[in-house]
Amino acid sequence: MDERVRRTVETYERVADEYADRHGDRSVVADIVEAFVTAVDGAATDSARVDPATPGGEPDPAGPPRVLDVGCGPGWESAAFAEADFDTVPFDLTRSFLDRARECVPDGTPVRGDMRALPFADGGFDGLWACASLLHVPERDVPATLAEFERVLADGGVALVSLEAVGGPGEEIDASPYDDDRRHFERYDPDRARDLFETAGFEVVSVATDDGGSDDDADAGDDWVAVTARV
Image (cartoon, rainbow, N blue to C red):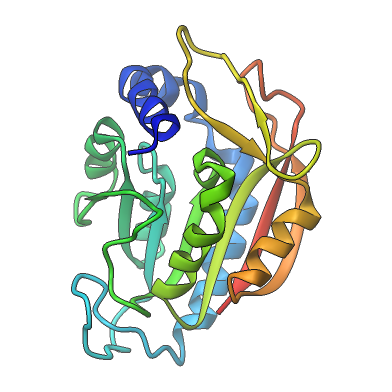
């Protein structure tokens, strides 16, 4: 495992409870959650998705929309998608977060893994949500990671990915809201984010920026860029 990713996961394992306390108010993402749910509902209508649990699965368009929550954290948005009657898969590399996600989505099946190599069949999901998670992937690995996102989405599937947008492309920062915070971050400007998605084969629907209102000292007042894209 990349050393930067390893340090990030180790930090989250250690501060999972504090992180949940800091970020439990999800009103800051309520609007984009609602927009994503609406988009996925539309994408699922004519979906040709396959069973996401097995490589090479058979086409399976029946049933509720399927959503992959990449970097699900404690599972807050996974719970929101489940409440929208989506078949939701919480996905994270941090075991402590997945334990919480199991509580948030008792009928779901959380999966532990690295977003750079998603363990799912091609075309298995109608939607992919990655809120403040791709920003931990080293910039050199982001193109291949976005190619993985594109791979697991069905034709017409929707991805919504939020990143911190500060400074130039691929700017690494040192954020320290926790004691001995060793997380790795990358920040992107909107143009760089758009280019990355288009290169990965997505049709970019929108690139929106907003003040995230984070209560982390290192993040307060910074803009977030939310990319909505289709396969």
